[in-house]
Image (cartoon, rainbow, N blue to C red):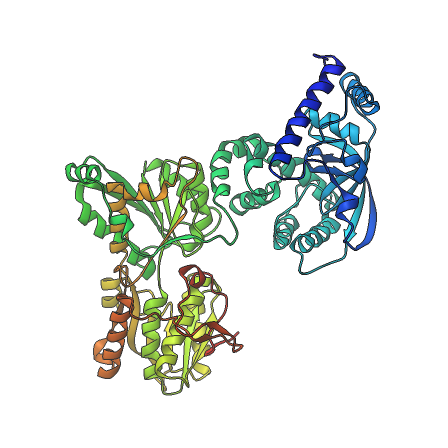
Length: 637
């Protein structure tokens, strides 16, 4: 490295920066000197030390010295504070000369404690390299292990890291939550690059995947986010899976969008759940004039997993597509694609559809397309993508779904009133929060009119498998269920053609074991949903909703219910007793007008734990995160 100043000038400059930092921190009432490990460990029970050998460590993680006395020689970021004419100053300048002329080669000695490094030998080498913004240094590492304390989050997370390290020997990985280590390990267990021995795969991953990602992440300013590089990499893998080797050009192309997602991303943060249409219906004078004179036009695409002949779910969405075509006339043009593969290949199909159709808006109408949709949304930021899913939305992709628990609660009232065996069967796809909320609401409806009845739940494990659903229905009937809520029962075509029904409550003929009467079903009125979304895009209210500032955006999940008209209840009124019919209509009106909530407490789970206090109502976020069942639900294999 070329010497552009004298050694004395380098030291004076480093000391001046150190003094400024020292005075700034001291003025704020903060510690202005280095941290010292011997001070940190005064009240810590160290149960073991392990010599790890010599490794390259990032200097940003070298945060202190071991001895308290030495900490006084440096500012908080390792810059020198001693006089130019001191012995320390002369030695610092000699280390500076060695760095500039030949490079610092001898490793320092450090203690690693809770994934940070404290210098035992080599403080001036660290100071010089930090002054010159060097990224890393070779270090002999001794790891200090504190006693496990389940009440200390830092130690709990550190022990999760130790388990991960023992499995992988990767020192460069640090995650902010303990459970994320197992999640990353699950990805790495599937990491088998061709030609790489199993015992070498973690080193290969570190060199050819993680470190290149880290370089790009920091290059684009990722260090400004309140997360580690490994946290950010987990989101990348969630979207793109784990590559054998990182495609750096691809990562660079999406990194600005990925950083925007990461800036709004948290594991358990409160989501912006939009439960009313009030904000979407607010328009400015300019919006009104623009809408009046029709200067906006949208091309709207729909992505279907099945065709309208085989799937009531697809048919209900297509009814919505046709509705908005008629409603908006020449202001929009719609297109659709069906039979889209329900696997990883959906991404390419959806992306090609969106680009070749030159769409402004794309609705993907199945939960199975969720990951493919957000990948497309990140890579095609000029197109607005909406995913029909009750899960977490993203900056580039809003979610839309309905409060399905509301009509399910009403069908539960019918089931509880009509059962003669007090055993009601319920088939479901899998135990995700949206499904659990519907099961629980159904069971609470049952309990409201029949405290004796039990709801038996069985899972198909697949989003759309009529044969499995039929097999499970037979199993539930064998368990004495005389009422079934079934996702894939064959229902009269006049019902499906009118409403797009995809699930039905029915009673069972005790002799034939077949559905006798189709009693009720939740109805999706996607036309109302799509009308409100499209109208908000045309009048500009959607754009105002998502634009929080120039750097962040609101992450929105549209979650509407009976009150907005996106969900309703089909009932075969001639098959239901008048009293039951009146009761259901009464509760439907109360739910619509917010006079009654299906989850109003007290609500107990299967273990008898009070989950919702008397008179209380869980928040939308709590309902969308349910992972427990109410006390009259039994799950069967």
